[in-house]
Image (cartoon, rainbow, N blue to C red; front, side, top):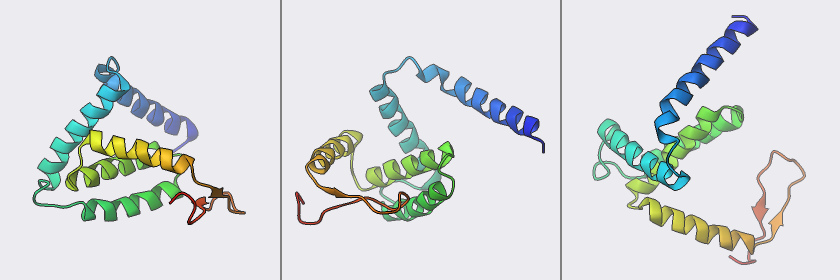
Length: 135
């Protein structure tokens, strides 16, 4: 496959994605996130089993796999989408609502802002917080 064909296929995929998301563009970001949470929940439970049938651990194990794939292809947007799917799926299957998850996320952000962070020598290594400081 030559570069032009690759570009055309990529363009077609982007165009189809834009057309598919166009009905949602009039929604606010919050409304879009809630709509995604609801649609994903319905699809996931119909496809993989209800929340009562399956807990969060399977989705978390799958998230590990998808995170490794995102590390291998850090510019592939679909890998990030997979990680978001699985994060939301695991949270919901653990009994969280979107509001609860977002509230905890904001609380954790405030906690992280108070921590001290130790930068590694290698830019591809994780940045960890200093243990014992604002834990």
